[in-house]
Amino acid sequence: MFGLLFFVLFAPGVSEFVCTSSDLEMSYAFCDSMAHAFMFNLTPCSTLNKSDWKAALTWIPRNDIHFLKIVFHVWYDGAKALHWKELLCSGADDEYSVCGTLKGETLVSAFDIKGSRIKFPKGNYSIILQGFSDDSENNMLICLNFTMIVKQDAF
Figure 1 (cartoon, one colour):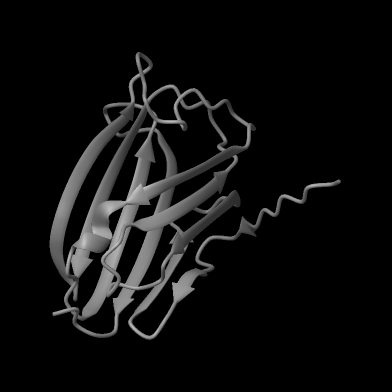
Figure 2 (cartoon, helix red, strand yellow):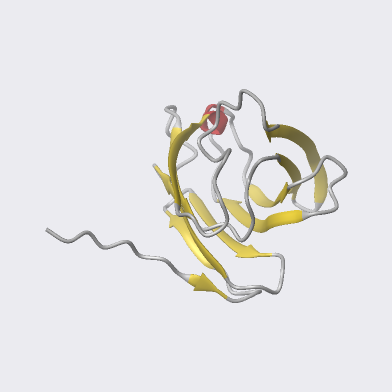
């Protein structure tokens, strides 16, 4: 039996839908000018569901991942709402599957996102996710620009 693995090479500025439903629409585009072998999926596609979101990621990084710092910038209806940094990989005792991935290897990961427990107000969210291979945030591995449109209040 043959398995088929599907990758999409994205050009800069081209938006890819993650999901769309009656209460949520989510898409992403890359911030840089290089093509990427990358896929991201999210279920359920709803802010009204009280369970965790299930995320699936497939990515072929262009660099080894021994150190990985993630930086989130979140805007809600044009106003800055959150700035958050998290060190995922430090090169010692790393707990995440992405850590240790070598340039050109296929990274396949599934994980839960606890954000669905948050009651998102209706509106437009812009989320910039940056991944850096150094603590000084000079060497960017990946940059994604997510757009999340919450179509109805969950209250």
